[in-house]
Image (cartoon, rainbow, N blue to C red):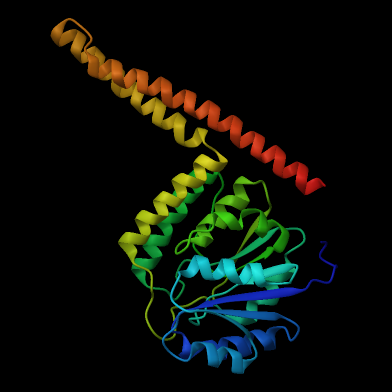
Length: 295
């Protein structure tokens, strides 16, 4: 799609106990684009979220019980019909009025992420956490990432469907799709958006410690899938260095190299071989995806 090509837009809004804000969010989305398809996924809410969204003009998909943010977004994306999919939170942090600006960059870019800026109206703890996650994501992807966890973004539907099977059930689908798109050699733009703020009502469902561990697991999985050498080579080098250091110490102290250092050196070689095999598999997967994309 070029920038001049008309696009149909579907806006996906995952919601869990967001009756206080969801109606207003849907109405603001409709004001931003009267022809936007708005799909709200009520993820087992115990309040009036579904009715509020439906009254405001959204199509509502209701889960009978809570599945998680990632599962809800995935269900909404699969039900959407637009060429461009916009994802936005239901808690009032993201301004729906910015959706046309995000969509306007789709064409030259395959995904546009609304990124928080330094000094934005978010909690200091969350800002610090985001900085740490951005640094890890930048190292993994090999490209500077301004906002790895932003839930406000626009993406071409055909590219989204390539990676939607990777979405975790809960958190963090923004991390997954960001790393997947960058590692898949798609064009990603980070659009600074000062209007992003704290949630207006209710409380966050993010659990910092548990979700940080889950985030690390997601990052490791994505690295192995898209760029395994970034995982296995440092692991092999660190294991080899430890084996050599222990071996030298044993040789000086005991006059012989013992089993522990040999085990580390053999493990280093195995990690290196795993990396080579995994890299070949990743390359074949990329070639297969590019072949079907061209077709």
